[in-house]
Image (cartoon, rainbow, N blue to C red; front, side, top):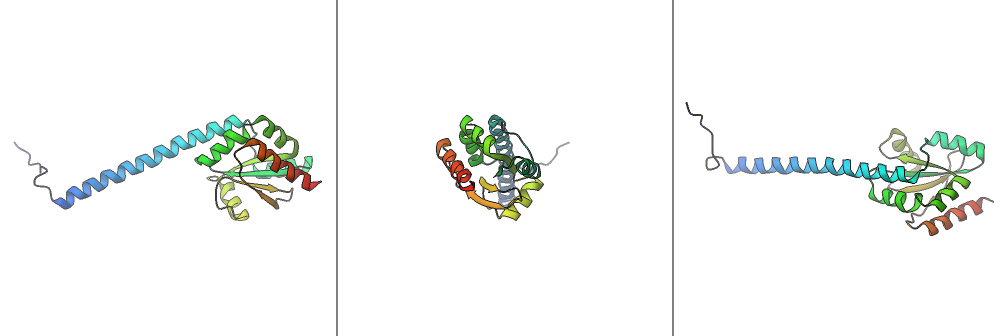
Length: 165
């Protein structure tokens, strides 16, 4: 008994093109999800390395109200390389963490969370990372420039604190 299988010579050129397109699409989808997984893992490692407490915006606003501090809202995405760089180079710096704990309530808002979607809409956030200083009523006071060097970032925080006095 023989089974007739078409070989490459009898397959139509259109079928060959469709097969190649299918393979390219499959490889692209697999690459996308693999990259997203790797970027997410690296992002979580950077977040963990900061040692900063993870709280919600609502919790941050309550703590700020009771401690008379401003809220520093960090709108980020776990897969974002620029956000990871900010975590690794600035928010992991001991002097920056000390300044944040002294004068601010830090909250990281993840883009892919329900809180992230509403935050982006409420504050017209269009990119990552975005750093907003909020008062205890959740009103935006200022958007901080992104600086990947700890000392200039500290100077910016000092200006914000001094403008409040």
